[in-house]
Amino acid sequence: MTDPPSRNAELAARDLAHVWHPCTQMREHASQLPLIPIVHGDGAWLVDADGKRYLDGISSWWSNLFGHADTRIASAIAEQAAKLNHVMLAGFTHEPALQLAEELTRIAPPGLTRVSYAGDGASAVEIALKMSFHYWHNRGQSRRRRFVALANAYHGETLGALAVSDLPLYRAVYGPLLFEPLVAPSPDWLDAEPGESAADVARRRLADMRVLLECHAQETCAVIVEPLVQCSGGMRMHVPAYLSGLRKLCDEFDVHLIADEIAVGFGRTGTLFACEQASITPDFMCLSKGLTGGALPLSTVLTTDEVYAAFLGDYAANNAFLHSHTFSGNPIACAAALASLAIFRDEPVLARNRTLAAHLARRLEPLGRHPHVANLRQTGWIAAFDLVVDPDSRRPYPAAERRGLRFYRRALEGGVLLRPLGDTVYFLPPYCIDEGDIDRMVDAARDAVDAATS
Image (cartoon, rainbow, N blue to C red; front, side):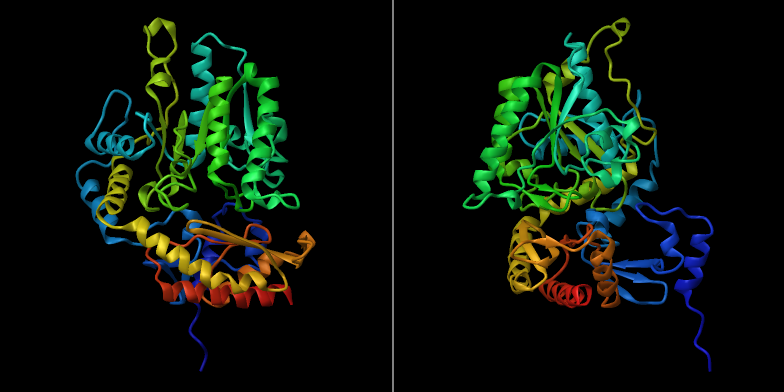
């Protein structure tokens, strides 16, 4: 008796005939890395077409907060879809967009009073960059055309966002199309010199930033930073003191501060927004991913009344912000975001996250002593380590060996989705996970480390 045909294989074959997947060498999907068709989500779990379940340890690219198919968010989407699917936000408004703007300005760092809508994280970064540049233009400071970014930064893959990113894997081919930022050293605490603490690294990197701004402030629009964790750059982490010091430097040299909280916002670092831990208000704050609980694409840029005022004037002055997206402030997406924020308001989400993050830290601690694991680190609900030849020297494996890919495939075999960044393994699960599933996730990671480094 033959086995029934695989539904996964059937759907994967149909997919490969037409779909071009992101961040993927498509040739590998036809051979060594089969596609996994997902047909159902259930809390922290994804279910494929053949019925196999996968624990989503990375929140589907860091966006899912309260679990797949959360009924509260799904109900809000359905209710709004029955009333109004979409209307352009130019010259019109609607209750979900204005309610969401009111709620975001209520919970954001003080002084962020204006909300601009877009569709995804990179689009939000584009808005913040253009707003900052245009602000200085409207203020008569047209020399300001440059931006300061951090080494190892990642802010998205549209051209402006990619220009202020510092990962050669993404930007090398497109270099001729990009403007060149000023790049400041990362405050990553893994770069500590012998005897240095994480706070010492922050102070040293702030001194580097001071030197850069002393030379270039008059031509600089803004400094852009991922607060506390540089995610796609390898989960590189820094202390809040770097942010507070950076805010002071931006004030001193009169340049804007853009906080890219697309990945770290909405509780990922232990507070609702990462900037809270440094008690700072940036001039622009970009939000996306968890904004809708991971249910629909939506992004926002929050800014100040001072920035907003610079764009007011007579029509003939041509100083308005002429930037638009068709689905800016989409009512259904805004309804999903309002439902997600209501969960934060009605339930002790952050307190529960801190308890679960502590459990994750305890379970990971023995893995940090593995003979091929180095740099175990954690900020809030984000934890990571690196696969290495030798943990004392932190010597990496040759990139061509693709140890991270070996890890990924073994973890999938064990029913856990953990997709490394190169050879950096990270954990960023949805908030609905429980201690038992954390244990399952870490056990699968330990097995995958053994398989990837044997």
